[in-house]
Image (cartoon, rainbow, N blue to C red; front, side, top):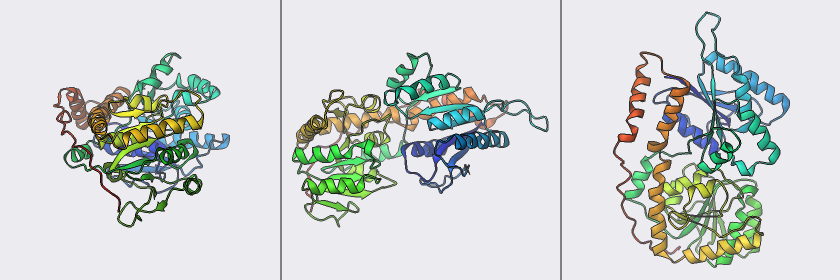
Length: 424
């Protein structure tokens, strides 16, 4: 049993990195001692997990020189006091701070006991091509000294390999249970749904304009999330003549509503299950959790062909659709392509059914059953089990047999054709 620490920026945030780390902490705690470390003070947005320890550094998370020194000092103290063997970092600045803090952490303590050297796994949530050139150069130099550079998809892995690094590819994942439930009882409706923070980089303005231009009338555009762009997007809807409502997606939504803003939701599975299509219009993504969540519910995604995440996750025509967009396209061209696809998918139930089943099937590779053993093997390599460690020995035995377990996800229930459900 190793002591594994997961380092995040803000435990009270609802971001994708925090969600990934929360799930990883939950699953690793079954076989390891796990501590979730937050730089900022706060209460866990995703809730407190039984069997997981929580530590906050109580420091600002902005990347000033002074703050960086404090991060290194506090992390080093934590590594030594808690005898942390493996630390997984979720953000670039914290990769560097953890790497510096871990230097010289081995040896013996004041009582002459062996002290573990903390090994660092840098979990790279930023797509290689989306960083500026100067930042890529800094990363190339710094990452050469990491214990493990973990990337989320093969597209980014190949970019790092061409620059002399040897990344480990382990994707984001979700638990398996809801996939089982969805296969036996998933009723889709007619809405187009978007899930994510309402931030400029997500380009929800493109989605709203495309929805308006497509003439989509079979259902609503449901926007799940909150953020600084909310007011601007509401103004845009009014300018385009779209009828807007803010609130829960239930019987209180007025008839004729075209765009619904639900606000942020901790559990988006219900909205995904009742939708017809997930729409993704971000300028850049690495391995978006909303697409994986949609796959788990059998919901296909229409996305811009953003290099890295969407291209790694979506096989065009099989489990989702990628709009025809060239590099450097003007907004008008992007909107026209998205509107064309929305109009085509509005009534093509046969295509939607095929994409839905493809999305459901492709979730397997992003399930805990497939991905968690990869983390277990990596941790066992960095912090080999000590003789007589029963918990670790049992976990190693389970890992070694993981590839021979029956695939419970191969028996798929085919989806029924989607039926229109009018909004009242």
